[in-house]
Length: 64
Image: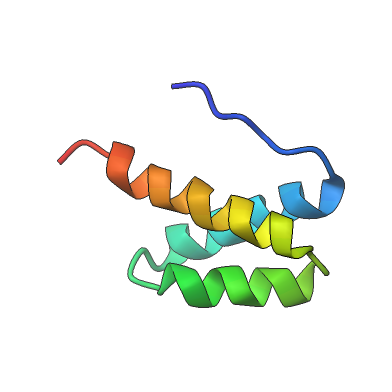
């Protein structure tokens, strides 16, 4: 599976941070993590939209 990483260091750090948080506790609410990442990494609304889509696809692509 190929993962497309967005441009920009802040968004990359946000993806790594969210992924780490989900590894620690997969039951954490993704919307809350995204909101926290937006504030923590000073992301734009476009970046927040990317994160929302990225983690939505991640859930739907997972084998069941």
